[in-house]
Length: 111
Figure 1: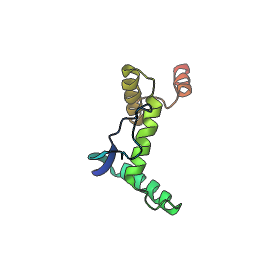
Figure 2: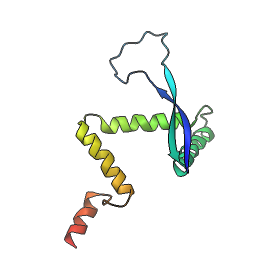
Figure 3: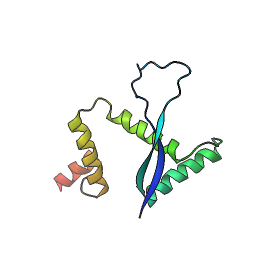
Figure 4: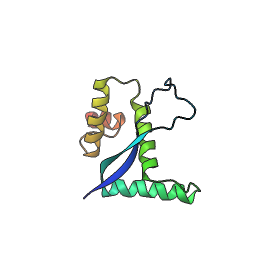
């Protein structure tokens, strides 16, 4: 079952050179994202850990925004083709169609 989760997506540009006045608040918008139950559960578990650790305002939006920032960092400098291949490969790996590491692929070729 897919669970729709509302997120607060930061709309402000991720360009570090973008100039903002000190009083300017970042804008955001609400978007709906479909997650499978286990994905939503994972976001809630991380949120609970953060709250227990002393971050009372932690929520799923924070967790998902952080994940998006990590993905942005990982894809930085890649071409459109490389980004496309990244997603295709990860999807195939989850579906069990690709080895999880290059070492696994080399082992399969030798056998």
